[in-house]
Amino acid sequence: MIAIVAFVAAMGGTYAGRTLFAPQKQTETELHALLHKELKLDAAQEVKIEAIEQRFATRRKSLELEMRAANAHLAEAIEAEHGYGPEVTAAIDHTHQVMGEMQKETLEHLFAMRAVLKPEQTAQFDRTVVKALTPDTSPPEKR
Image (cartoon, rainbow, N blue to C red; front, side, top):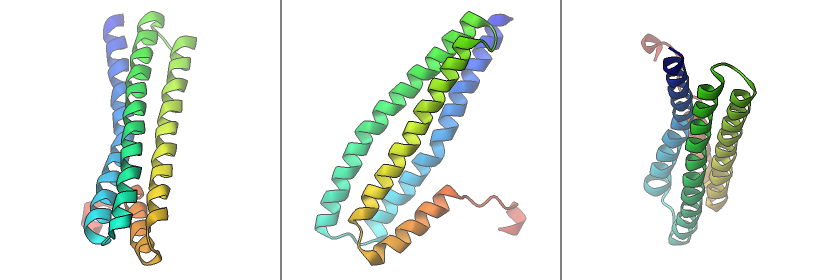
């Protein structure tokens, strides 16, 4: 029974971590499409944006690996303590720290790309960021 509870808790932690990262990936996809298809970047902007994207891809991969390790540590702590003890608390805190770092890095990435844009491009970029971060939560019949 204890093993089942530990397994379910570990899976819940993994699911929560993946769910929290999903909106960021969606935002990146929307912004990538906007940048490369709609904003009509010039050659110099393309080069700068590509360099920014490459740096962030490396950092994101590192943070994703750290998140997997944090989730594994959480699973181990749950299995060892069989309850909400100090190791579980520390593992949860570490998971939150990594999630926060991912969010900060993502925002720094967005602002770095925005800095490359011309004034007439930033308004559309800003609208896309805001839209991605504030999805329509109204009932389907009101959309």
